[in-house]
Image (tube, rainbow, N blue to C red):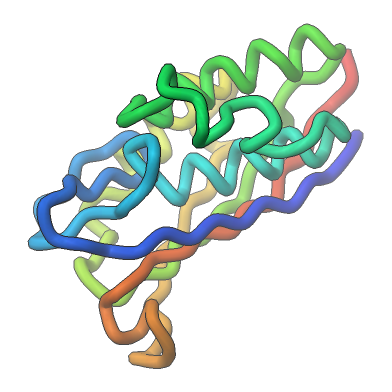
Length: 157
């Protein structure tokens, strides 16, 4: 077994959709990025690549590559799973936290877990997603950004 740590952050801006864990969430702001900027999925991707010592999200899906412009991050996660499997690994479990001041994410957590488990080819009980605020501190606390962290365990085949 191997463990990897992932982190991502993006600014919240008007005129973008808010997508977390592959779930569209009604909110006046969305995350700014080259792809759909799903911070949760990006943190998961980095944790999986890190656990396998295969680089990071940018080394596989460059934000300079027009092929990834506005791409659904769940497609990137699917490709990530394919890459780690090609390198002899499978997903054990993930434990992720989204840090965002608004909106409250509790109503969306189960759907995020279902989406992620399906793409990760694992049982929903191996996918933990939690949500926290930043207690009004910093850019996240002022509603201008969101962050996500993830720890992933991978197993060798």
